[in-house]
Amino acid sequence: MFFKKKQKALAERKVPTHIAIVMDGNGRWARKRGLPRQAGHKVGAEAFRTIANYAKSIGLKYLTVYAFSTENWKRSEEEVNAIMELLEKYLREAIADMDKNRVKFYFFGDLSRLSPELQEEARIAMERSKQYEGVQVNFCLNYGGRAEVVRAAQRFAQDCLDGKCRPEDLTETHFSELMYSAGVPDPELVIRPGGELRTSNFLLWQSAYAEYYFTDVLWPQFGPKDLEKAIASFNERKRRFGGV
Ligand code: IPE
Ligand code: IPE
Ligand code: MG
Image 1 (cartoon, rainbow, N blue to C red):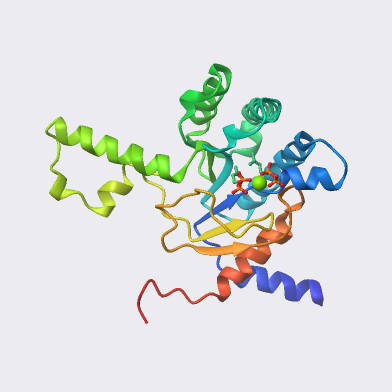
Image 2 (cartoon, rainbow, N blue to C red):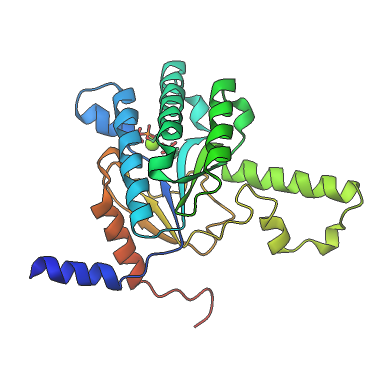
């Protein structure tokens, strides 16, 4: 009976087109267990795998995840290296399992600062998955919202210098097309696990009208049930976009 009711609720709720997640809390998850921070990142990568597959199963079109920020370079070399190695391992495995999972890969951020191996894997993952039609995962790597806006402004200024456009003709739609997220609709729901109540430079331009969902659950423990809680909360919101 309870199960049936739950199935009905799941069938009736509206899944947003685009959900974005700040995958935060790996370090604290590890510390609580007396483990090195790296262990948290490892379990965090597993949590991501589960969420990406679940997202596909419920028909989500876009899932954008914050994996490494422009500010995360401030961490110890040891931790940064461990994160980069995990990312490489994750992408290698994702490429190998690609035909099974059929998840489309895309990347937001300045990848030029990443290792040549990681850049190459990102390129292969994007190239080989571009024909898939299920969920598109946008990995934010060396991503910062401010850096993204500055880059868009630079690209526009260059186009003006090249005689392709004039400053007075710039529109919000055109500016959006200069972002990493060109062609991707804005996220309707931004989820931040890990207990912090801030954006930490995530999708500043794109989340102008996003609904936020914060939870104390740490990312390595965040599962489909938690995603459903966030979606349920989203379904209760009254979005007004400045209207009445
Ligand atoms: C998020 O978890 C992963 C990255 C930022 C790379 P943290 O490493 O920030 O974990 P906490 O916030 O210290 O618990
Ligand atoms: C945001 O988390 C970045 C990622 C999850 C990749 P941080 O842990 O870096 O954010 P702050 O330092 O708590 O603001
Ligand atoms: Mg953190």
